[in-house]
Amino acid sequence: MANITFIKKLENIAGRLCEILIPIKDEYFIGKGKTVAICTLSSMDLLQTIARTEGVMNRILIVGRLLSENKGIDTLIKFTLKHPELRYIVVCGNDVKGHQSGQALLSLYRNGVSRDGKIIGATGPHPFLTHLHADIESFRKQITIYDLIKCWELETVKATLSSFGH
Image (tube, rainbow, N blue to C red; front, side, top):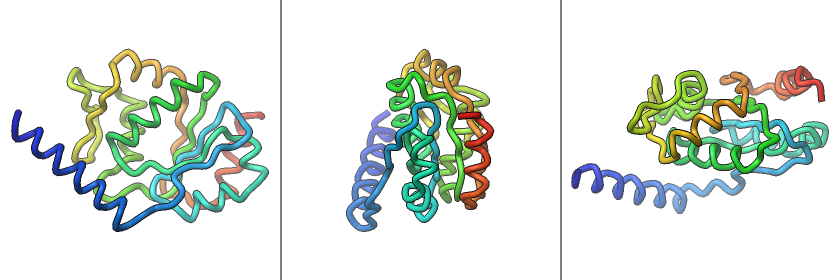
């Protein structure tokens, strides 16, 4: 147990160092919609493009990145549960090498978590969530995820949004 605590502390320190040494300015942008979120994973150019596209931002609640298979997904769950009208998450762009946060999110949606909070089927190094099992299940029931991983075309994302009929 002490070894796991030490490893967690080391990971937190490494994460903070990355934030300082490789700052990524914008994490998310809020739109005018209520039912759709877009997750661009590690694709910052796609995030910026969507944020500058008024027709998309008028239809979505939020566009943001997802860089980790644990804290990032925990944050996404928390946001989703605070926004009960949110129904769709479009996952697009490049998955995060090593962490595979997009793959972990899809695994969570399809398979859930084990008793210890591990995302079933996730391939990242630490796919453990801290939310209560009931909250994770509420998240899974509330949303539908559209898998556009490896898609960087704005037109494809727009076409997916159009399929929601808003």
